[in-house]
Image (cartoon, rainbow, N blue to C red; front, side, top):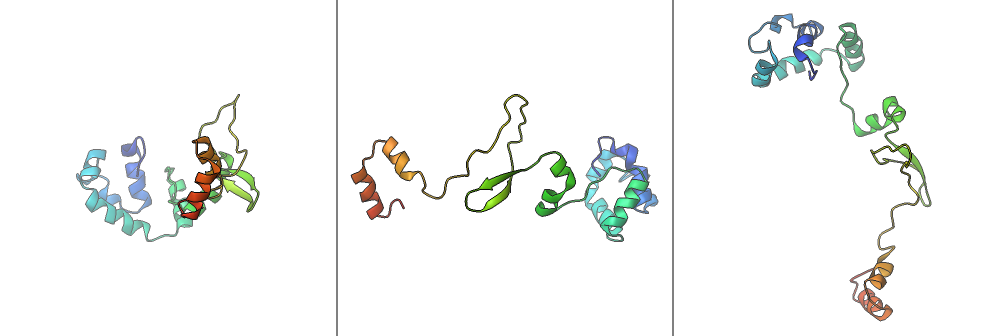
Amino acid sequence: MFHLQADLYWPRFCQAIEREDIVNDPRFNSIPARNQHRTELIPIIDEAMAKRTLEEWKTRLADYKLIYSPVQTPLEAFNDPQAKANEFYDTFEHPIWGQINILPSPLKFTETPGSFRSPAPEWGQHTEEVLLELGYNWDDITNLKRKKVIA
């Protein structure tokens, strides 16, 4: 339970998990106490949480007016409607793979929005260009390829 005012929610949380016996337990009746005795508290909460499905917990925690969020796999997080609503990813047309979803810049600027203009380079795609800019000539590059230093 990680609320900004966790002590305010503690009694309701204990009611929701049907463990009202620990509300005033000195090991758990304050944020510092719960932190100090977390190795004892975590199994208690785990045991209580294992008694219901996620859907049941969503309803129950909402009934007790508790703030919660389930732990999600990366795929679940990606498909979460809130992730879409907050534009946590964007769609990009890749020349080889077609339409793909990508993570855009987390910074959002009103007047200069970021965008993807090209895909990441393929392996070795710009090697010759870079080497030419660094002063290598075509004979040097051919020799490096022959020695399998570059592809």
